[in-house]
Amino acid sequence: MNAKRIGILGFEGIMGLDLVGPAEAFATAKVNQESGYEILIVGISGKPFTAESGVVFRPQKTLASVSSLDTVIIPGGRGIRDPATNARIAEWLQSRSGRLRRIASVCTGIYGLAASGLLDGRRVTTHWRFARDVALRFPKLRVDPDALFIKDGRFYTSAGVTAGIDLCLALIEEDFGPSVALSVARDLVVHLKRPGGQEQYSEPLRFQVQSADQFADLAAWVTGHLEQDLSVEALAGRAHLCPRHFTRCFKRALGSTPAAFVEETRLGEARRRLSARQETIDRVAASVGFSSADAFRRAFLRRFGVTPSSYRGRFQCAALSRAHR
Image 1 (tube, rainbow, N blue to C red):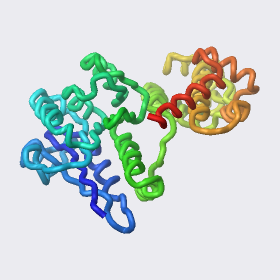
Image 2: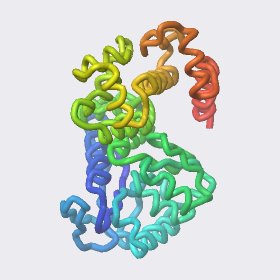
Image 3: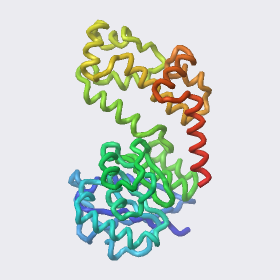
């Protein structure tokens, strides 16, 4: 079996995990006991380069010396937003794109790929923190700030850091099938297909960062116990405060009432379950703690502007459309 050659670009100021994560995922992929990939670290020059974390990498090839590649991965990091580095990578991508089967960016690696013009008119994603800036700098891109990764033609873009591993698992599955990708996911102890999007990670974390003292882990606990009693009285008891004082402290910490936060969290998880599972709408409603399917439908319509059944229908239609591209 001929191993597929993967070139991972390297530069000064790289995000180390954006390079190491994909490299480990591809290196773990075995087909009939043989490695499915040959992985090359391709530097702008032949000199070692240093990641933001201080880890030093030594390239095996350079942009000028590397020969045929199947797939190119462009990691993120502060360095790729340096004008000289960005221009060099964009120019190389323009000159080599016709000979590459796939081109993928991880996190802010999109700055180098977008600067090449190859993504113009395409749907893309990046780390949620940089999505607005990418959209402003590259107005020809259709930026989805919530997706973990997106395929548009032979171009792939992914969200921050660990989403690069999600992307690589999808590439491995595309090349060698789900059994090989699942084996890699098991070895790396990660989801083969992580549910939901970036929003589910950014919002609970934002709450934990903004909250203090006894609220620090409350958001995580709520997310894991949506089917339980999450009334103000129950949450106040968990925080060891009287309900009135708890409500005041909670609103001051988050800018939201406890009831609003609980409903938002339940609806967010319900949306994920409607997208990822085949449960009935009534069962989804019960599983996230709504007292009745009717109450769930009213809340969902109020929050998202569509009914749960319409949302599921749109999601399935979109998935079917992607499958037939």
